[in-house]
Image (tube, rainbow, N blue to C red; front, side, top):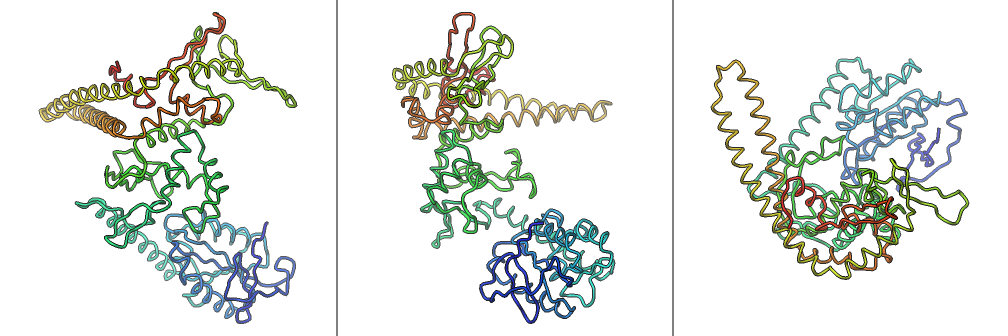
Length: 540
């Protein structure tokens, strides 16, 4: 077991061992070996719930009382395990890191005969988790293991009715706090003027002192940079590494640096496009996003920091990368190339020997087994791509504008048709005869159709609104302008990002001297273009 407690302090005759330093205390040498010498040791568990308490007095209060109680019980050595800013209501005891570390330390050191905590809510707010999953396994091995609370005289006994009442009270207190917090957040976002409930400001924003509103600060350029890098194909991890190399401070003062999860949080945050979204997680434990219709969403709540084109591009890549796509792969045309004869998507194959300086990489048809080297097809695609955009870029910009307008008109017609259909379904539902023996089944069928139609209608409304924003956004020309740059000057991830936006499909005819046909996209808005094709809305 790796023991991390490297700091020792002497407090009123009791040695305190900790993982982190205590600036106000003087370090001393421990006069014994806690693993080899025969001595009696007690562990302590300290926890608080939020960052505010981290910089407050919670540690000092709990630690002082724990050391004093340990001395009264005759212990000379206290090994402290501290859980900073972790909720005992949302995170059960068996899933807290320091609780697990303490449990393992106790089971691996026979000198440890007891544990002490400040009071019940420090170890659990779920009543049974600490007793069942932490204390239970310890007592199976050490039947005489003792537990102490600084708020109870004598030993702490989980079977004592008074202790059980205190555990229940701690749980009920957390349930009530959670309910009040949810009600407060709901009332704030549902008010006539929705506001962002009290919490940490999004990175790049500060709370003004004048009217208590949130406005952008000096970090907004970092947010924009993150979105730009991602729109060029860079991964969350690579962006984090670039920011760390540039020595840009991370959003949290306590963090050691930028992480991929921090970058990911920024890229998924709708606040940056001007929307207020709340209750977006599936649950506290599960960060997976709820469907849009289930969250509290107020669009155009404030001035956006990220434009519609940049947001649309980054979200397309976020959805695309869910398939574990590696954008920096040398197979930059993966998923775009098909065999004309077999109608199969080509797979990639790296046949390069271990010590070879030359690369032998191919796109292969899984059916007919024919293949083409990456160098050969990349050269052809690069040449065609450069020629097309050097010649047709201005036309493409005008075409994109015309196509967006056609899509918008087509969606409006679809929305009108769906509205009519929805009204018919609602009318038919209202006229059902309750005495009909199949009433319940018919009612359920109509309700399912109404729900499905309403969901489809909402999707079309959202897409039409998205087209409006894309048309008005000044970044459209910058996005299209990426195509005219020398494709050879881009990195692999940048090339792949550009090809995914510009090319729909590449067909290769192996039976006709590897003839290549490139189907370019009508616009760089991949997901909207695919939806329009599904709806059979004309683009030209």
